[in-house]
Image (cartoon, rainbow, N blue to C red; front, side, top):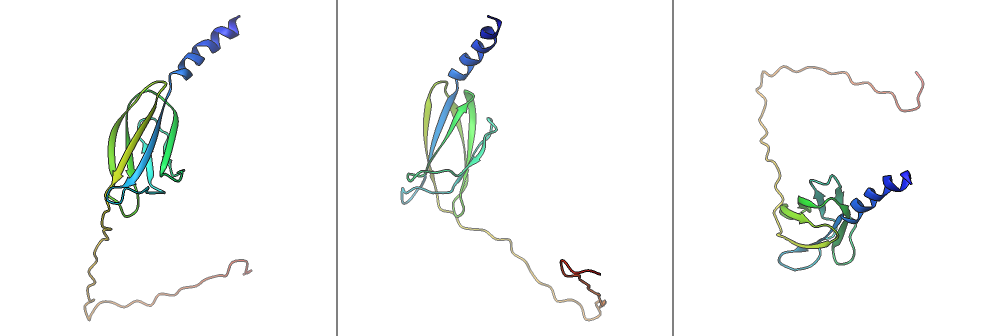
Length: 132
């Protein structure tokens, strides 16, 4: 009888978990963006890239309450949105990402002064598996 008492509250808690289904689409083309990274911030689920042909992924067994999603994909502007996870409910969220330009850091090369000290550096190596 005591064993039943321990497991009964656990069953009640499991029945109250929620789920979120996220579909990520290209804002202009309205087509799926496969391979986008989605992170559930508050539930510590992490990222997923397991997509179906519609560009949809799903997070199950989530604790109900406020949370947020961070969505990113190469070539698109990233996005962070607040969400509400409801108990015993599958919440569908459609996200449209806008194409973004890739930004690379710029570097400027400077010519060394003529009197810059030159040092000879000796480089040695030992091939892997070679004995000394």
